[in-house]
Length: 254
Image 1 (cartoon, one colour):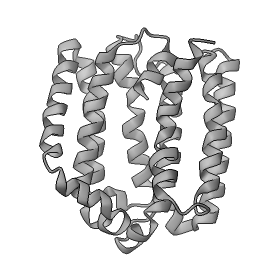
Image 2 (tube, helix red, strand yellow):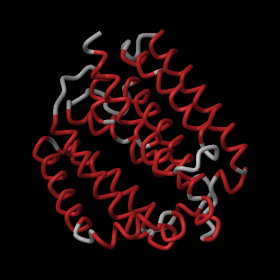
Image 3 (tube, helix red, strand yellow):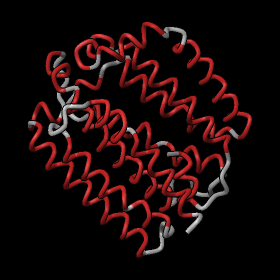
């Protein structure tokens, strides 16, 4: 996702912001694995077994995040500050359990990921970091993509979330209505992408990413119709971000 944002900005590819955000994400998700053991025992017991078998990953992720913050601070102070945002949101999500408030679970996760354009903008010393139209467009781009996939995972986790009184869209609306809601959000996202290209805010690279809208419709359709969680959630849904990177790379050869 960081690579995609860098390319949509039009900046040269730089591995340092990718490393910063990789280790930041690595820390947040390992923290969440620790705090969500009860829910995961119901929703995804294999995840709990993995977490317990590889307990060293959490302290390793802490070291990795300290390394990420050191890289950020060494570059400039604003990059350091922006790199704190996803971790703060991760703590709010995992430790303070605000995710039990309706929709806040999905919004917090999406906001954490949507801080990527601000980290990238700060790293490349974008003038008017908080007033740039481009950065807010990219913020919405990341936010909507992650919000959709987070709600999709809520469908998988609906049983455990219901027991632990975590109010998610699938538990409030039901799976069928949630699927229609995701279809609408995804279509609006596609129109939003085309608009940003038409008014010359994002480059034509964004047009290539509009394929993601079709791809997303495909895996939303498969939810509940294929009884293979590893295929639907582990490969197709999580693979969306990898596919975006591949599409951007392929665009360089077209």
